[in-house]
Amino acid sequence: MPHETPRCSRRELLAGAAASSLAPGTPAGDGRPNILYIMSDDHAAHAISAYGSRINRTPNIDRLAREGMRFDRCFCTNSICTPSRATLLTGKYSHANGVPVFNTFDGAQPTAPKMLQAAGYHTMMVGKWHLFSNPTGFDDWCILPGQGVYYDPGFITAKGTHQVRGYCTDIITDKALAMLKGRPAGKPFFMMCHHKAPHRSWDPEPSIAADYRKRRIPEPSNLRDGYETRTDAIHQCRQKVFTDLTRRDLKLQPPQGLTQAEQNRWLGVCPDSVEAEIGGRQVTLTGGALDSWKYQRYMQDYLACVESVDRSVGRLLEYLETSGLARNTVVIYASDQGFFLGDHGLYDKRFMYEEALRMPFLVRWPGVTRPGSVQRKLAINPDFAPTFLDIAGLPTPRDMQGRSLRGLMGGRPPADWRTSFYYRYYHDPGDHNTRTHYGVRTETHKLIYFWRLDQWEMYDLRRDPHEMHNIAGKPGERRMEAALRDELYRLKRELGDDDRFADGKV
Ligand code: CA
Image (cartoon, rainbow, N blue to C red):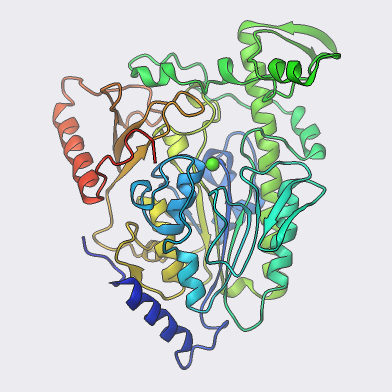
């Protein structure tokens, strides 16, 4: 497959990187753009107003869309946290970087940050890392242990561990700003600022939480999806708002007098009735009224967490302005994958359905991205590493499987840009009894194979954007289905997925 940027071996790359950092006429720090990559965890595009959210406003994140480019079709190739992070560092699919599930990332392998560091960038990482090995390729790093916690979080640095009192999103922002201010002069920088929010358990900053508790969040049209025409996979999963959110998720308070073990048991159960105060009256909620209440409480907390992330983006953008860095800094806002916000009655991610598959991806690159522009070509998270390198003027290593998005950012997509991509999810049963699957998405259709069930789903995304009507096996769709199946297995072969992690074991 031809590429718009030259490819080279790792040795050639490092030699080229060293040469480019010393190239005459390119003084370090002022020729090459800085890169600020801000990523949240589980922030669905449909909870960003620039993406047309019906449920919240995100004025600071929206600025990046207004002053830069909104990618409308950016997708994750394995929609869970750890694999997505390994992919965006390496430019490779899960089967190629060895992280299909929640397993340890081998930090000895080549990554974009290492190549940027070798090319003279000052590299920094702050926030949620979640790769089970410590960061490599960063001059300065400060990460949450594992998932981290929302309140009074601990951190790990190269020097040891420490704890900070306060709210996680605000603290990560404080640390990012301190790192930026303390960076060495005369070098361009690459920073990854990774928020924990709005990941489950959706614990908001208290003053914001109180405001969101008063809001009534509109329900998605398919909150009460009955799954007619769908395979067994969606019936079997345990990531349903009405039947799987626990009392802990719903922030219910355990009765007095329980031991710690009894409290944990009580909190770990999905309630079938709840005592709530509504309109100043104490009522017992059950059935449909309880279902609606669960959705409200889930979304109130999730969106309050998003609000803190949005404010954080505002603080970082403000620093870039006041420090004079904004004009030569590429700012990207993304999430490690999407999330179900009651769509199909679900929370969490994993499935290849649009809400979880889609990643928000907004980029402001002064002089390159046209303000207010929208890109509808298919972008995927293996593209992120080649893009970081290309922004710095570095070629894409031959073994990376993504392609630089630079041409798309400039509004000039290469003529041979992809029109389909491959997806694979491994973590079965995982935390939510989600069936393993792989599939292909084109610009108009999607085909998913739940191979352990030997069941297929197919959607025409033009007529059925919410994926309510599975048309796999339907007469009249056979030609399209056969073409999609051919494309699926062509991509699987081309990418070298030989089923080596098919059982999710590494
Ligand atoms: Ca995530």
